[in-house]
Structure formats: structure tokens, C-alpha cells
Image (cartoon, rainbow, N blue to C red; front, side, top):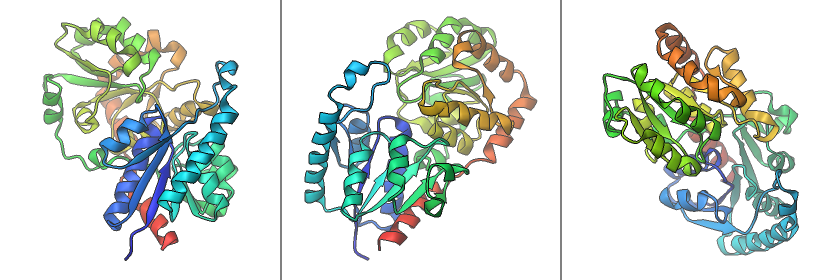
Length: 364
């Protein structure tokens, strides 16, 4: 079987990048001679994370629409035009047989050009509320992979394949024990452990709530693994300084150890984080990011709450309610078990393989 050349476009956050890498690895496992090129936005985290995963990436001079400062959008049309020229050059050099878009504004010019050339395009939409670029591109896509039902309101029904969200193999296939996980962070296996993750870029409200209530963890025999994100890293390290029950850093590179160590989780409710929580069966208190497009993180969290598979605290109430909520959950074994069982029923461990098989079937 001859190899294919495939471009994977998009990024901006871990929620777009890590599923893209999972899909590429799954295709590579089925068809090892496949060549991949990732295309992202210069200055965004994909430019660092994709090479770390062993793949090549090209960066576009492109930016998304800035909702908070309209003046910053003046250069957008020029950047978009420039990105189309960059994409044309990439296509001429790489000659892709297919293009996969995973969301993020850098995916738009890549899939748009591919569709104009008649190259097969595939979209992965991780959220329950589709992004604008994906909606526009969906009309001419070969197939659209979605995580949740009811996506016909965004995409042509005959193109939708419900697969769930691909979780990194390092997490979904992890065999690390709880004790190994806790020792990895230099903590005590005898104590209940809370993992706080605010997404790859950090979460201001979660970080501020933890910093303001830091002493409450030790007072309730809890220890904390705290990923702050870069913007809050200095404040977080200052808040945790000298506390033996706290591990703090801006980013956790080996999340499989963090999930293995965690008895409870505090988190945003992006689609990929929720997919990981479901696969790892973790009782969680979720704080949706209220400024996500169409408030989709609240939709994601509410979906779990409705199934008694998670607890939600509003972003605006996090400062006063988040830490008390996690402490209360830590003392209620029955509620922990219920949340664990219910969130575990929603886990999909092989979404990456399903997506890989569907793509290869259509491009042979």
C-alpha cells in the first residue's frame, strides 16, 4: 500500500493540537509510510508542541478576530491574503492528497484552498457548538467527525460521523498507578490529591481562587497538583512556596502522571479536557470559561451535570465557591463514586483509530 501525503491544519490551544497529533499517530500506525505536514499559526503553541511530537510544521502569518479590541483587527484582511499565498506555496511543495482541519483560524485558508483544488478535506469538530470556520468549510468537506450528537444544525447530516474526541494515547492507554503518579510529583500517597488544570493557557479565575484559599487544602488533609499556565506562574509559585502538600508549575508535560495521581480534578470544560476526564473516570468540579465562542464550555459542563457526571461552578463565583466545592466533594465518598461511574460511561478510548480508518477509507 503506497503512502499518502496529508496536511493537518489548525491549532491555537491544546484542545486543537493534541487531537490532531492523536489522529496523525493513529493513521501512521495503520499506514506507516504516510507523510504528514502540520500547518499552524506563527507564535502559537502548535509551533512548539507539534515538533515535540515528532512532526514537521509550517507557520502562517495569520491572526484571529480580536473581540476585545477592534483596532487590532485592521490588519486582518492583509494577513488572510498573505496566508493564502503561503498556503499555495506549501501545497505546491508538499502536494497533499488530503487535508484535515482541527479548528483554529489557521485551518481556514488551508482547507479553503484544498477544497478549491478538489483535494479531499476532513474536519474534526471537538465541541458541541461548532466554530464559524468549520461551519463555513463543512459544506464542501468530504467528512466531518464530531464528538456529540445534534450537530446537524451546523453541518450537512450526510457528512457527519460521530466518533467522540481523540484522547492522547499516552493518557488513554496509560498503565501508571496512583502511587507512581503521586511519587512523580513528590507528594504523599496517603493523602487525597486534587489536580487543578486550567487548560493549556491557564485559567485566571481558577488560579485566583486557589491562591486565595491555599491554606484550606492542608487544613482539610488535601494535597494539590497545580498547573497554572504561564501568565499566573510566578504568583502560583509564590503562593505554593514552602508548602509540602503543593506541587505547582506553569505546565504539566506528562499529563498521564497527573491523571494517575488525581483523586479529584478542578478544570475548565473544553471539549478535549472533558474527553480526557471521561476516559480517566475522574470526579471533577468544572469552571467553564464564559468567553468561549457561543459559551460552548458552559454547554459542555451542563451536559455532564445533567448526567450527574460532574459539578459546575460559574466563573464569576469561583473565588468564593470553587475551593469549598472541591473540599466538600473530597469528604463525600458516595458522590465521588457516582461521578466517577457516570463520567466513565461517557469515555471513548478509540476515537483516533475510528477517525484514521474513515479518512484512509476515503483517500485510497
